[in-house]
Length: 421
Image 1 (spheres, one colour):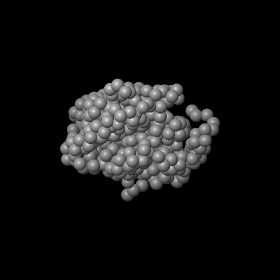
Image 2 (cartoon, helix red, strand yellow):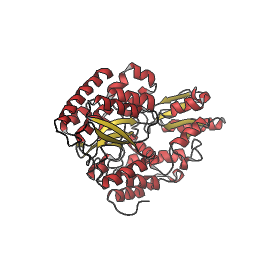
Image 3 (cartoon, helix red, strand yellow):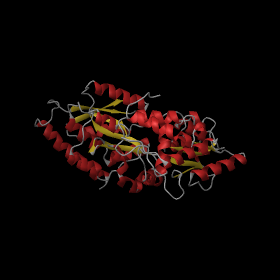
Image 4 (cartoon, helix red, strand yellow):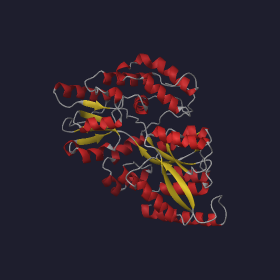
């Protein structure tokens, strides 16, 4: 089904919903469309604004979506919504949740599980890893909206054939350094959640997990040793950025654009940025899938993205469920990708020629998403992440000897014991 036909179906659903509202089946307003407040991160391309306007227009008078812009930083976004929900704020109709927040919000009773019939519609054709992030205790609590993942970006003028493993990449960086050429490997090593994402990718790529699927116990084990050894190897190589312990995504981008790096592990937004800012670097900028930890075993890169949930205290839940289905229809998913650089969650979009032309790294992203891993699923994720990044800071101090300390601190976080740094 193409985007136009899907939109037609959605319009039909909206018309039915409008009739239901008019017949008094909703707890919403009796005078005109109800206002649905959509709390979402700042999106600067205008894609979300266009989606909200079109869905509102096609709702048949059932609702009008009003965007409520959250702070830039994820911590600030979570904090604002938590404060409002703790006060039973009924203005939160549609919530844009980071993929790590579903367990916490569900356990707190702040979001509505999706009805079974709608759940099947949401899950059909959606990337399974993203559905996993939206599910808690067997219930779907949010609808995957967009996703994200990291690729390996490299300079083809320095490295004609990209590395497949971390070991190869570090060796290539060493050789480039000996030749006096740009050689740094840019990765997120600062004490923040991005460092947890790196560690989670390495552990899962080595065949392990940080916590059990139910989030109640620490797993780690030998795969975590391999992950710690990989961080140690990079931190003590010529490929390590001297500022590795302070590096986040944007510092990585700037170092690559400054011509100091040969490699960069980062999200797709770096591609249009380089195109606009440094055309000489951009013409040699290529991408491939994330390097592996174990030779011949595909990396399992940590998945990111946003899920949309209906607020527990919303007075317009029926309209909010309908609006979310419209916001994530194929037409809007494609626009979010092309204008905003946000990879879609609907698998069939990746096979459309028009999308492939507009999104040249589509295959590397799709291949990565099919093997992606999720961050530790636990209501205590924020504490778990803090303990991981704190224990592994600075990267130059990381060794396999930290495994026992790491296990103990993550266990404390899961069981709400001790102090969180």
